Length: 185
Image (cartoon, rainbow, N blue to C red; front, side, top):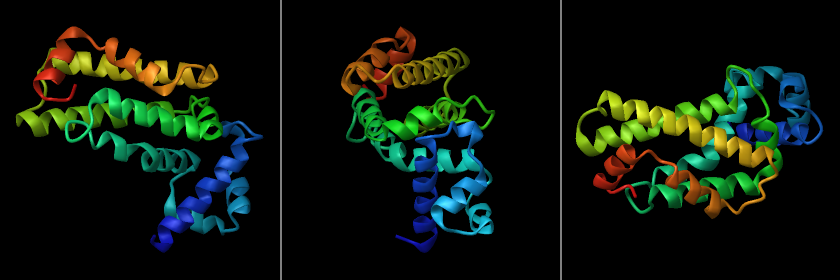
């Protein structure tokens, strides 16, 4: 692991520790750097703000499972894996998804999965999705994030595979057809 990644993980551990007692919106960069034992400048060499740190950590946890969609995993399998990661890091995600800041994890997750599915469709077809499919994709991604957040903040009572199955079943029929044709289901 590179020195920069080690520092970033130290900062992530510090913010996770802060999140056990303090809402994300109340955590300061000072709290994070003191917890990590690094200088403030070190924080800003690595991240724009605390939300950038949270979003980076989220990406490290879940991006790998999504990159397998259409390769060795279906959408449902990748969603299950993502939700399992979230469950394993329950305290972090409960804190992170409570924030409604403009740079929050909710917004980041939406942009990430929308961009991922869009780019995957472009790679598989050679062109971007048509407008009505793009609309359905955006709506589906927004709803998926909303329901994931609801599951997290509701105490994660259902198993990840149950939630993933529901998320896939909620996919609009036209979008599901496209995903089927692309071998993603």
